[in-house]
Image (cartoon, rainbow, N blue to C red):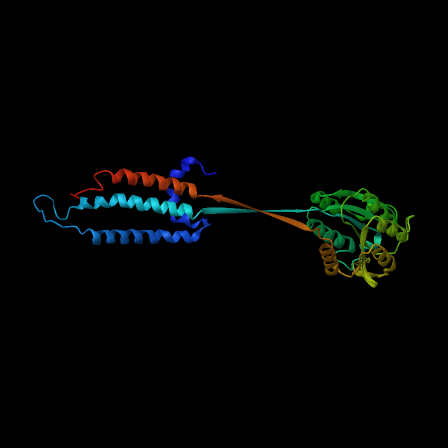
Length: 346
């Protein structure tokens, strides 16, 4: 609501203020130039009907007396009053549109392999570091989604529960190293089971697990297929990513500082079965760019629907002009009955 004291500010008549308005009845603003024309026509008709006899009285009143124009002052205030009423009727407004976005987030569990084979350097600088960097980008690209973290090698460990504290998650992912676990091997079934256990009490409409590994299940005491069936029963989709290339890949340097090669073999069957059972998708990442594209694809597949509410708040500003119109009208009434209106009329 406009403050009463501000009604009498001259800023209401500035061109900048008038241009800033939206007009509910814009067509009425044409009356601003129509009204003066109508008043002039009325004056002209009045002069035709009642011609004025001009007398030359040089010794009594000067012919070019400038005070004669004071007779126009009442008409000027009457015109101002009409203009103010026209502006008020045109309904000057300002609209403030507010947009509120909210989303019912999904729950995502990142399950990352940190076994020794993730140290192979077919990715830059190695598979694990490339996976960490891409996972951080994925985390920071989410909105209102809860994300958790499980790491595994020969055993599985829950690194972070489901949370929206993305800064904490980023720090935890950066802290992942190969020496966090003593058990050797790749326990995919145990990792999936640990992730499901973390999502057991989730009430999210969509529950997703992203499993990233470069090897076959050769450790742990949980069968990956059984773990996948358990996930499917709990409506958890598991997107699986096979990281690495088959064949000879770089791995460190020899005694003389020369890069040495090691044979890499990737068994995709287990990861494909897990994705198929949970009605998700399997991906193969052979380099950093491919891994980045896969996370982007998963991000697109599992975007939570963003609901947008728009609120349009409209403020009317006709009151100041209506008040000024009333003021000018009373000034006109006052001057109309004073000597201004009849100045030198007789």
